[in-house]
Length: 434
Ligand SMILES: [Fe+2]
View 1 (spheres, rainbow, N blue to C red):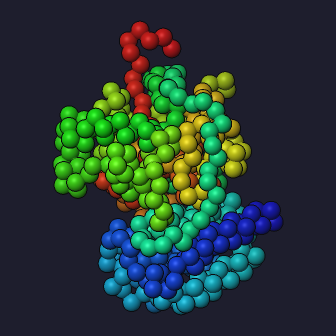
View 2 (view 1 turned 135 degrees about the vertical axis):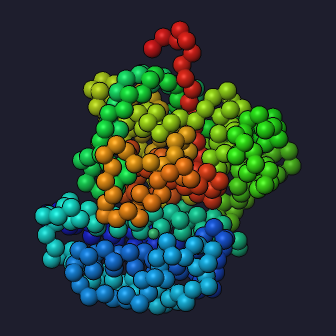
View 3 (view 1 turned 60 degrees about the vertical axis):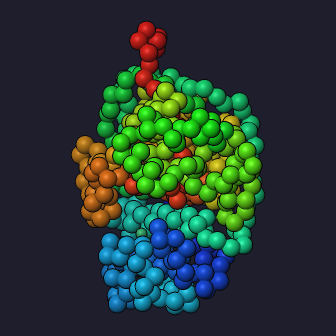
């Protein structure tokens, strides 16, 4: 129990240190400014993180008096769309910092006294884990806001590792049932549960995400001008939004450059492509004579171990991610090139499924068989349906606490400000032996 509490305290501290770093990187004017209608002002994320922590850990788990019940509605994400948040009477930067600090002090006191057993919310520290993941997810959102802000660079990090293995082509995943989702991962969210068997026919999947170099060939082949490669909905969006290349790409003579966190550099051909929407991913796949993997295919490629027939927590096994396994946690400010993480490959030899870029899959967001909303419908269930497309695997901006083989993310198919790319798959041809 003490070890679990120490781990929770450590994870809470890590999340807060990242939040503070992202907020403190800019001045107060920048914190309250809206850098894009797609995003909240950074100061909204900051206080919202504290408000959710207060609601779940101070009031619900701790049974304590509210700290600031008067601001609950300001930070209710369902009540105010991002574009309207700057007009709200939000806490200012100093007030927001003071508020999240007060809440955190109370939470550490609650953690000290609480019994982490005897109820679904506290068993295994679930509510604390949910709040750690929530803060880390907002940190990734704040990182995306940093990518959208203009002005001088304010974030720095060492470059990701170089290629350490030659990774190319595709991997055949054998047909048959595998266990998808989890019933045992203590901090898994409701949408990852329960574990269930899914029969996935044999298929082939790319050993690595689609790269900038590959994607540039689609652009050069006028893929953005050819409705054959796009769905009707995708083409309509392509035209209406005037898409011609991934977000943040700019022409650079006869090549491409991109802007990242305020710095412009030539596009690196071997890096996974980033900042493409679902429609662009799907169009590329059609042009390449392939398709996107389904969500069960993606998870089987990531977790299925043919030697044991079991599903792993991660492609490399059950151990928590280390810097050798995957590009996670904002250690770097870009995806790593293909081949940079041989130690993170799946048993079948599929690389970089975890970290680098979120991967669009060709499946809408829905509950697994036996889904039960927990701890509230607003976590996942209200998003189920055809409007949202699933993304898997996490990005360089995703913390290990909010990323695992079963973790599911979702967004609108037109979204490009998130750190998303994709890989392709295909059915096996008749007579292809497997
Ligand atoms: Fe939130």
